Image (cartoon, rainbow over all chains, first blue to last red; front, side):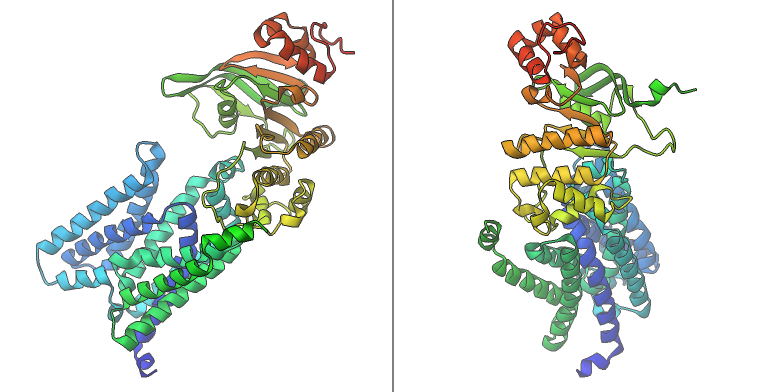
Length: 273
Length: 257
C-alpha cells in the first residue's frame, strides 16, 4: 500500500484506468469490424513518429498524435478504392513507421533510451499532462461509442443495411480509426508499442466470449479493460516486474479463464436449449 | 410542374448499366415503380436480379444510366426504405447482439420508436426470443429477424431479395399475407426478387422479367396475354403463374375471370 503513496504510481494508475476504459469500448467495435490489427499497425507506426519527434527534439506526443491520426485515416481510406485489402494497408503503414523509428534509432543520439521506453512502456514517464489527455480521450470515446451504440452496432452487424438506412458508414469507420489512433498514442506510455494491441484486443475478446447483447459486451469489455490495467500495474509493483508485460499477462489470464468457462461446447449446449 | 402521375413514381430506373469486370450484369435496364405498386422480379440465375436491387439501394457502382428514388412530395424528405436481404452470414458465430438490439437498428440515424420495434418483433413471431443472442437463431428465425428489422423502419418502399428461401411453408404463407397487408393497408411499395414464381402470381400486381435487360415489365394480365412471353417463359410456366394470379394464359389483357 505504501507504493500507492507515490505520485508516479497514482498517475500511472489514473492514466491506465482511463486508457483501459477507452480501449475496452473501442476494442469491441474493432473486433466486430474485424479490424483488430489496426491497433497493431498504428502502434508500430507511432513508434516511428516518436523516434522522429525525439530526433527533432520535439515533445513525442505532439508529433505522434497528428501523424497517427493521419496514418489511421490512410489505413481506412486506402481499401475504400478497392485497390487493396484492409490488412495490406495496415501492413504497409506499420512497416513504414517501424522503418522510420529503426532508422532514426540507428543514427544514434541520446534519445535511443527514450525510444525504448515507448517500445516497451514506462509507467515512470506518465505525466500529469498524460493523465489529462487520457481523461479527455476516455470521455470522448465513452460519449461517441455509448451514446451512439445503436449506430455502431448497425455498422458492425450489417454495413449494407446501415448504408440503406442512411448511415454514413465511412464516417463511422474514419471516426473509429481516429479514436483508435488517439488511444494508441496515449497507451504507448503505459504498455509500449509492442504490447499496445493487447489493450484493444484482450478485454473485448474476453467480453465477446460470453456476451448475449451488444450493451453487455461494451460494459464487460470496459470493466475488463480498466480492471486489467489496474491489476497488471499492481502485479508489476508487488513483483517488481515491468508494467506493460504484467498488464498483458493479467488480461491474457482473464481471457483464458473466460474461454474455459464459455468453451464452444457449452455454447452449443446452450444454443440447443 | 409535376403531374400527379409523375409524383406517384417511387422509383425510376433509366438506361441502367452495371458491369462486374468486363461483363455487363445489367444492360440498359429501364422501368418505373409507382407508389403502392407490388412488383415481383423474376428471371434465371445470373440474370442480374440481386445486382439490380443492390444498384437501386446504392450498394453497387453503376456504369451509366440513372436511378431516382422518389422522396415524399409534400416534405421532400428521403424515402424510408426497408431492405430484406436473402440471408446474412454472422460476422462472428457468437455475435454479441440480441434480437431486439438488431431490430432496433432499423433506422439507426432516427432511432426507430420502441413501439414500432415491439410491433415488428411480435408480427414476425419472435417475441419469445427477443433477448436471445442472434447467433443462437435458426436459419428461419434469422430470416424473420431480418423481416422484423425491415418492418420496424416502417418503410414506404420494401426491397426484398429472395426472402422466403429459409422459411417454413406455414410462415411463408403468413409472410406473403403480411406483405399484402402492408401493401394494401399501409401503402408500402414492394419490390420483391423471387424464384417462387408460382406464389408471386397470387400476390404481386406487376411482373418484371429480367435477363440482364428487361424482357417483360407489366401487369399479370399483360403477361398472360403475351405470346412473346409464352415463347420466352414456356407455356407451362406461364400458365402456372397466370393460374395463381387468377388469369388464364392466352387471355386478352384485362380479361381476368
